[in-house]
Image 1 (spheres, rainbow, N blue to C red):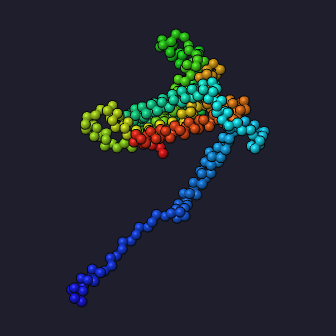
Image 2: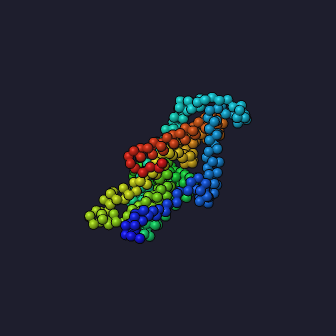
Length: 326
């Protein structure tokens, strides 16, 4: 074969095609490849459907004059009557005020104290002392509110309460204060009780976020001559900002969950105008009075407000370029 024929044959030679990558599995192939994970999720999905979605059918009571003895087809429909009553009833508006106030106090104090405690705990150099303080701080989380409210009530007792005794000894007050019998103190007592019970537990996630910050940043700050306060302000806090924003968005959804146990156990007839929350309102009208429709309407209101706040906070975080939940 001549040189010219060799060149033509090489030029006309069909190039080898590169092997194609396997396409991503679709449809039943996904089910086949991940069937173990899907089967494992079935009990969780059934649990969510059974206890979270099927009960939504009960919301229909809010639009009825519900009578337990009657069948569903025999119930009389009243439209938005109960919702209109809620927003014109002075009792519910007072309850809504108490709920928002105590929930906001708990959320603000909980966030600030947990972040500050986590940062200060991170600055402790002795590992043994650090672990001891951390363990002591989150142990109250495992106490029930019945035990906690008992401790609070005993501490704030008029005659032998340690708070009154201590304040009189240091000369801050002259006579014992009836802490649990005056409404102006109730919100502060609830907020302080929540902080004491949950500050150590809430600080755990911030401590975990702090440990994920690169040590090289602190080493560079040491080289630049930054002190401990500057490292906290310009490295630690910005490093956990995304966690703070995500937790803030999640907690906004619980803005109407001021609590039930602590208000119910510490409250009394003298402070009912400051202690009653939406949960106590639902208990009062739903079980004691038997007005299930009004109680259901109050519960629906809580759910709608919570979902709205979550999506609003998530949208604001997205527009500001911060971390978001959805």
